[in-house]
Image (cartoon, rainbow, N blue to C red; front, side):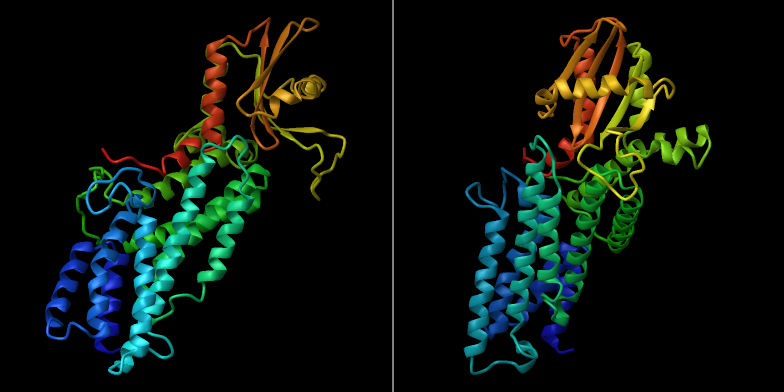
Length: 420
C-alpha cells in the first residue's frame, strides 16, 4: 500500500471508530508535510478532509436532522448540503486529477482517481440522511406503512454494494454497510410485526442485534469528546446519539414483539419466567395492560387482528374475521366476537382514523365496548361493565399512550434534535 492509500485508510479508520481527535492530528501532520507542494491533487484533497471530519462528527450525533446548530453549521445550511458540497468538490478534484500531468499513479488508483470513490461515500451519506428524514416523518403518520421505506433501503443497498470499493475507504465502507443492514433488519422486523409473522420477525430482530454488537465492538476503544453544537454525551452512555437511537429502536421492537407474541412465548416457559422476561424489556406492555385492568376495573382488555381480506397459508378458518393477539383475562373471550364485528362494522369510519376510537354501549348485556385502531389491522378492545362515556380521560389517555408507543411515534420524532 503506497503512502497516500495508507494515509487515507488510517484516516477513515479513525473516522469509522469515531476517533476524531486522532484523525485531526493525523491530518494536520500530513498537511504540514505537504506545505511545499500545495498545487498537487493530493494536497488539494487534504484541504477538504477537515470539513469531512466535522461532517462525520455531526452525522453520528444526529446532526443530519438537527434544526438549529451553533458552530460550523450555519442556520441557513444543513449537513446534507455540506455533504453535497463536498461531493461536488470531489467531482472537481477527480477532473483535476485526470487532467494533471503529474498524476501519481498510486493516487489515481487502478481505474479511477480516489476522489471518485470518496464522492461515492458522500453519496451514501446523503442517501442515509434522506432515509432518516423519511423515518422522522413516520412519527407524524396516521397509519404507518413500512413498504416505501423498505423499498428505499433495498435500492440503497443495491446502489452502494459495489460503491467506494477503494482499499483506502475499506474501514468507512464497513461501518456504512453495518448501518444500512441494521436499519434494514429493524424496519423489516417492524413490518413483520404488523403482519404477526413470528419467525420472520425473530429472524430480522436477531439480524439487527448481531450487527449492532459488531458495530458496538468497533467503538469500544473510541475516544470521548464534547461536541460544539450543543450536544453532549450522557454520563452513563458514552455511545453516539445515532447508535443510541438504533439500539432504542431495536429495544422498542423487542418490547412490541413480547406483547404481540405474548401467548406464543408464554407457552415456552413458566408464568414467573415470562413475567421476568417482559419486565426486562424497554416497555412491559403486558404489565401495562394488567395494571390498567386492575386500576379501572376493566372487564376485558385485548388486542385483535383483523383477518378480513387478508388470507395466508396458515389460515385454518376463513370465516374467522378476527383473531385474538393477546387478552386479559383469557376466559370468556370468543363469545363476544359477534359484538366485536358489530362494533367495527358500525364504527369503521371512526376506526379508519387512528386518532379516534369508538364507544358503544350495549344495554342488552350492560357493557360498554371501546375499540381503537392501533395500527394496520390491529385493534385494541376494552370492555367495561355499565355505561362509560368518551369523556373518561383515563380511558382516552391509556389508548393514546399505548397507541403512540406501539406506532413508535417518539422513536421516529426523536431523530430530530434541537440544539439549545
